[in-house]
Length: 386
Image 1 (cartoon, rainbow, N blue to C red):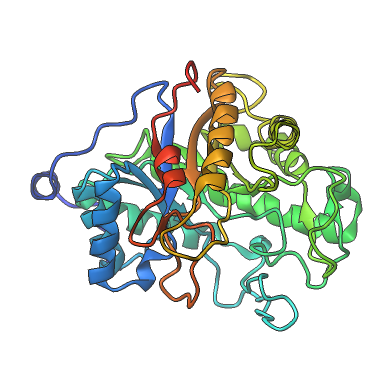
Image 2: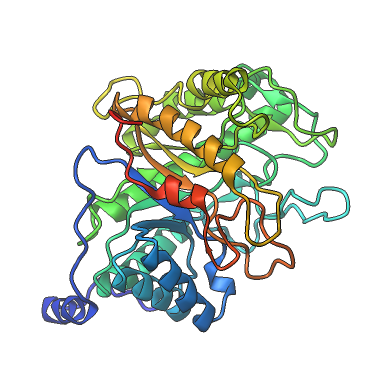
């Protein structure tokens, strides 16, 4: 696609004037609340417009989504932005045509997606992709809420560097230098850092998005010593090991925040013992590496996926249990936000994948309206009052 990077200044200003006002940056120190929107590019334009209307009615200010780098993707971003909603944009590294692929194996590993190993990501192909996409967005006056490079790269589901089957392990920091499989994953991690460096260069030379934060891939909050989640030998690298490895190789000079994904147990809502266990896990694992901006030993965090399922598919929906869990989670967010260590939380999810034949139990827009838990998740977070 033709790059818009070298458009003459008058043409660029004309684009800004026709695209509407640039939305202001998030006020310093404010906590970002938002929603994940699932695969909006799979929806028709009419369904996209219905989605955008729902988000606007609920006063959603930020969504986490990915878009295609073409006219359809840019058009969706324009329509979202016109309703004063910013996109926390998911991006992926780019690969040469010769890169090997791990095939999708739906019978054996139905939730482990296919794709290329991170170690084959190409910095220059990625640079061209990032530049073209950002040029198109900025030609339409669009300022993003954030850039998030990759998704859950510390486990087998979204990082094809992991073999299937693996060893049935959660790898530690020591494993990344000693275990043959984990060493190959570490090689992919090093290549990922090169792609991050390219993204930072493109961001730093942009016109409208120089202050837009760059986030790591959303990382699964697995701890050292955790059991694997099933018996299919689908491996992970722990969150502390992943961040420690990245930081030892220069991560903090490339990103503004760490992105974390957390899905706490939803058992026994309202029970103080169960709540205490969830809080302890959140503090000791999920946000343990998060630091206030300007710290010498880490970066702030965004929780770019979090949520609880509601298996009740009846309408009207009884959402009381999930609402209690969301209230509990917001109290945990508030404690860490008050320290400046947590600066955003994007609930998963607003909706169901347009291609899905069943309702997403995590979705908070159900039965034609926003659920009680979704409304609570979107309320501004006030650390002093939660």
